Length: 535
Image 1 (cartoon, rainbow, N blue to C red):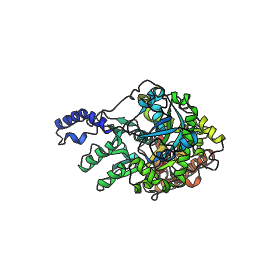
Image 2 (cartoon, rainbow, N blue to C red; image 1 turned 90 degrees about the vertical axis):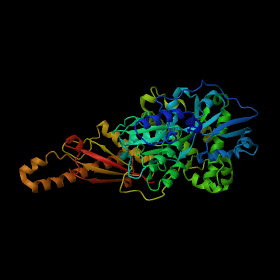
Image 3 (cartoon, one colour; image 1 turned 30 degrees about the vertical axis):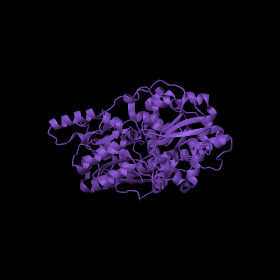
Image 4 (cartoon, one colour; image 1 turned 180 degrees about the horizontal axis):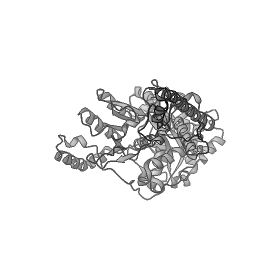
């Protein structure tokens, strides 16, 4: 979660907000300048970092920078708090102390320069900074499980409804990535708005930039409560998501969160010069973090006071915050880094998904994902026999029943079948890619299901009417329903046989020609995939 911008940066860009106010006022809108104070100029390139340097510990203390987020509780428990001390796992077992600092601003330049040894971020950030960022990634810390969410006007029911709408976001963090990723899954793209007066793209999700993610929530809440319609939602993180919904008087709702979406992965990033000079300390930091994670996973109540004191929280808030994270263990680290780019929830999958989501404008020359990764520390820990009893276990989090009326998203896919048949053409490479896409949707979202709605071409209906009247049309309509059902079943079978999808997470229905898309035969020979997630 180490990706927020300080409020001071928003205030520093207040002239931009004042300029926007002047434009709006000229157009006749009755607003005040403070209403748009959160807006900043939309960036079309990634910020430049300072040149790299090497961090060197002083007084046997290693500096580690984290943010106020429950996902870093294991590190705090391992260290016995924020301050360097001799009671920490790091000193007791490895002989050095750790100083944890809390910061909500981007510290990539400080890490790059060598002003700290370690920081934290999410895996989607790495390709944005690419070769600028001289770091190594030795460990997965955990997954965010609901801390990031999309809040929208109450009449917006699915991701598909965001087409042509405008969302407030902070750029270059997990909120930015999340909406871009989901837009890709919906078959849409995003459009960056220079300001609120810029024309909307009716075919895309339009994004307006704010200085930080909390500001995105504040701006949307004021907009919706004032009855204005320029902003339709925001992407922000807890507790702001809950605050916006609670204070909106029913005018806003949580569209979805990443509670059951394994794409926001928190990782440890280490100054490259430090990692090369002190590999034993890096391994100790990884092992200590894993021990802390284990302690919190096994008995979170025992560490409530320590975590609350470190973050400045009320003790009763700690357990609810911990429910929104999954602290990773050793075998989960192994799976995360070993997964291929099409293994949903893996490092490679998230990295490549980020490259595709941001596109060539923001990532013109992506560097290979493996350039950052150093798994030798995890391998050495495994070889030592530590954590031998641990098992990889990432469960579905269910707070309510799945919404079986409104899918999270729907997307049309035109599968190609054998001529005059319901048999799926398994030699067609696009069919295989579409099957992989459908399987990945299920893998990145534990507990989610897919409904396949089959459709066939209605172009011959007038011909049937001429040949045999209503009776023939009815008879052929029944055959069309059966054909569309058989084709759906063929796709389901391929998902189970080739992609090893659990059949219980798949449903299908044949609709024949009842729901045509315009008069295009090609468009009407399709399977609509509806994705239902549990929130």
